[in-house]
Image 1: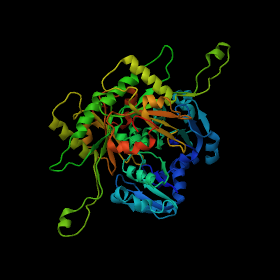
Image 2: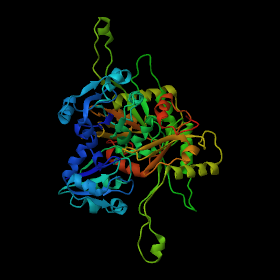
Image 3: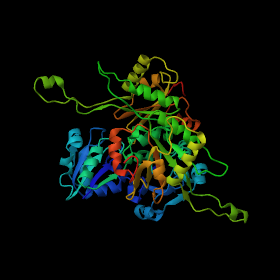
Image 4: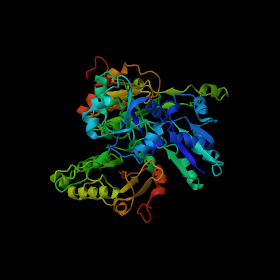
Length: 277
Length: 277
């Protein structure tokens, strides 16, 4: 029949589209992919709305066991629910390719994602360059590739959206050593940690004309698209001290040249006492 | 009360979210902004679904007569419906600022937009640079600024999304000369016209290392997010001859370096006999 890959948007269960909801209702099995982002409601809320069971799909299941998910999709519709929009993450490509190999039609049902909602702060989306990812640094692994990408964007007058690391299934190595398979509690990088790491990279790389520094205008955003979303504008140094609350967070490093209309729309979000106030 | 600015997504009336629909139902007045994009259903379909009247809002109304729209918004909720996502176009900023001045709370309800759905072709969204616009050339006005932006994106290894011109309310100057205010039928730029203009710009600008030419891989897309969407991959020269059907169209100029996983996902859309087949 059909493999539906359905975006849930960024907030609660009622952010699904009518088309998405109708598709879910037609399915014999419904999976929820929840390791590349997080939904701010439990799957019980989804089940109550859909009137059917929802199975959590792990990364292994989505990436390597597509056949388990696709099993029986020739006889009845199957849905894979995705937080945000299905084509904004890249994790479903394998499943789509596999479905095509099995001659199962795939239908994508779009929804809002951070790539679009990032425009909520007032910056114009068409001025954004490549998106960067900020991974959690470890003692021995401190990759600075986001620094080069941000530099290139800024030199071209573009803003840079930074997506922040999520760790949802880290093994607890201490427990593992005692023979127990235990996972650490999930971690979601805050704007503050991202800024610390970005400033560390800037220091390590040395001054480069045009790249960001502690005085660069940034936008910290949390829970975008949710009713209690938080948007704050200020310099890197200023935002380091701000509290953004619960996850998910993301960050925009502005181009040096922010358009007058962008500034006008952002004014509302500038933190008190900012150099940009 | 509340000014809701509600994204309708990219397809039919059932692409609204449940949250959006509930908001519309709470409103005393509902406007539809329909000059920066087009909805593929008539407003009657929306009215039937919502159970209330929908007023078409012209560009003048949205950009200069916010107060007409906001009138009474202190007593009852007002909705402005927008094709795609409210923050992906920049035309609603004025209204949001005006609402804040009048102390009217604004709530944005997100939805899918072309900025996210462009990933449907298999290219990774985080590899996209700044978005360009291709305006209809006239005899005396042939702006090539998209050429420079595309060049910069490509040198940095980024893809470029090109949004194509829409003319929905062009005065008919011949009729105007006879004293009649008549508008020309709406025009929507096709992938083919966009490619012609882009190749003209490339010729006028002369060869620049790294910028696009007739052999550059592109993706032409039409009616993204709709059930009959059309996606075709090929060189500029190859896509010039392809028919993409009804509007809206958009175009992606790929970076020279397309990732292996992107290629794998795009294979499906390559036109017959392409140099990329």
